[in-house]
Length: 273
Image 1: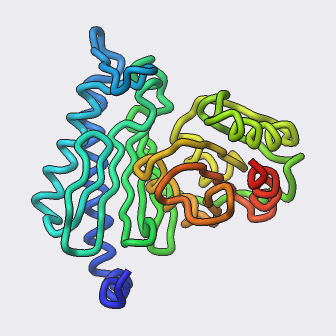
Image 2: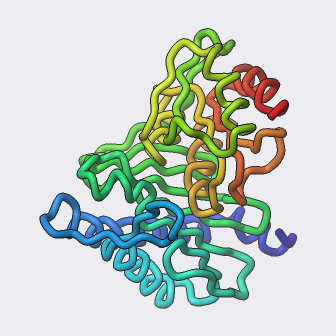
Image 3: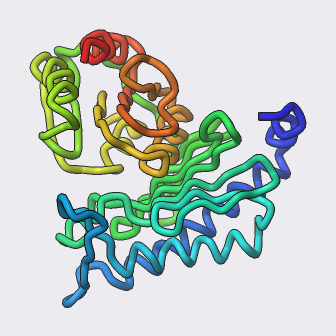
């Protein structure tokens, strides 16, 4: 991030503009995703030949709607989207979009999917949204504040204390985490925590920010899978790194925690993988 961009991002006017843009993106994606959710005959194509990696008209329409808003409101910014690729910008800011994180849940009618929006200033997200259109929950983090908006009410987000693995609740999307070595690392943590649950996609990260969950461990992620959640969790007081304790905003192996103490305990086990 350049000094000029850093100074600009510190101004309330630009922060308000960027936050308003993020909300407009999330609003547009809500319309597109809810139009198709739990409807009969929704087709799902697969992006890969070796396993089922679904994509639907809702994924594509939601990202298209968000890109159209950015073309009008922030044409100088870059875009990295899961469905429509990369578009270069000139401002130093890049919107990182996942129109439906959890398409497998989406096509199954399960409301654990979400719309992810991150704003990357060059070294990671400075703002992000995890939006769950069906439940009406919008988790927002950035510029020193984190909140949950639902039904016209806003409440602050804050992670909860968790001193050790024995007291922790752990989430991951798939029981078969990553490669065999990565799975062994995950299981080394799983075997020490109080409770492990599976399958919530991005919603698990939102629950860390909400103070309901202590750890999320995943592997094989992309930047658009994590930038929105990272911004929300960090603004709520949590920590997100890779399995070596470094930056996680480009994806790969991700460890999210509400408390630095349980993060350190999990990291010690994961770093051996």
